[in-house]
Amino acid sequence: MLNKEDVLERLKDVKYPGFEKDIVAFGFVKDIEVKDDNVFIEVDIVSSSPEVAGELKADIVKKVTLVGAKRVDVVVKQPKAPTQKSNSQSGKNMAPHIKNFVMVSSGKGGVGKTTTTVNLAIALASQGKKVGLLDADIYGPNVPRMMGVVGSGPEIVGQKVKPILVYGVEMMSMGSLMEEGQSLIWRGAMVMKAIEQLLKDILWSDLDVLFIDMPPGTGDAQLTLAQSVPVTAGICVTTPQQVALDDTERSLDMFQKLHIPIAGIMENMSGFICPETNKEYDIFGKGTTAPLAKKFNTQVIGEIPIEPAVREGGDAGKPVVFFKPESETAKRFQESAKKLWIVIEKVNEEGGANNEAIQPTIGVDGGASASACSTSGCGH
Ligand SMILES: Nc1ncnc2c1ncn2[C@@H]1O[C@H](COP(=O)(O)OP(=O)(O)OP(=O)(O)O)[C@@H](O)[C@H]1O
Ligand SMILES: [Mg+2]
Image (tube, rainbow, N blue to C red; front, side, top):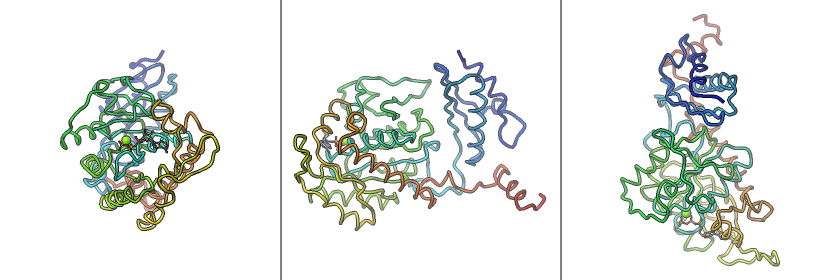
């Protein structure tokens, strides 16, 4: 069995990139947790260079694996690059080790944001991505119920909290941190603090995507989130009726004002599939979001029918994508997840929200200028 001391000893072999001194001697190792040969390490470094972080992480994983760790999760904390462009309003990034943030919003309540977020997250995880889900609906957190983890308290590690791993997705919600049935009246400032803490004080892995399930509308939670992290893409969920579409337009407008790239509109409750006959009926209408998508220069990322299994799965904590993968709804969520990933890749290629990862290194610690010189052969 591994213990902390073994891990710490091995970390003394990890040199800080570009230096002779190791990261333990530098005092960069902030936290080591060992459980069942799974190791979590947090280091806090002084360089904002992604190359330095990547090199360091690879070296740590290599060295710690050699002493028998089954899985090594490394969080490298870094200061922000001085020239970092960020579409978070404040230029802040409270969870820089997470590669992409996807905000799921809606103008109206009850249109299926949480259902969409949960199923898209599970779908993307099943497609091989490392996925997390943050329930930012501080007023009415529903994610624990929909993921079947009501009452499972999370593990506390020092001052931090481990996300709950469920259906291949790391999840955290205020609902998991409060007593069951407890209701809270939140003021704006408290919502801000709560969301910031859910980003900072949760031990999220180095996720490919963190989905964020928002409360309905355009309020404190949305603004706080946009100020706290660079949001890679937003999804707006709506139902097909005109009254819902009016509110959806406000939500899309908010994304635009916050400079959040819109991944698409999810048309939920789009037609009804009769479980007996498999025939499809229009209840609230269908296909009504396409003109709105066009107006905002985006796509309809999916049309999810009303399916009793979706509601049953939501109430029972058994999401359709996981428990009924053969259902039409599950297939459509899988398709939507693929479309979302294409948008995320495109935003990153264009240097959009996630540009810390692709910013050229600024020569604060000499790294970039040195390598630029050696490749150009200037001899310095
Ligand atoms: N496609 C669907 N078919 C059947 N039931 C659905 C579908 N989408 C959502 N529901 C059900 O509708 C209800 C509302 O969905 P959900 O909680 O996901 O909406 P929401 O937008 O997150 O609501 P809120 O604004 O309160 O956070 C839930 O009971 C859910 O199971
Ligand atoms: Mg919800």
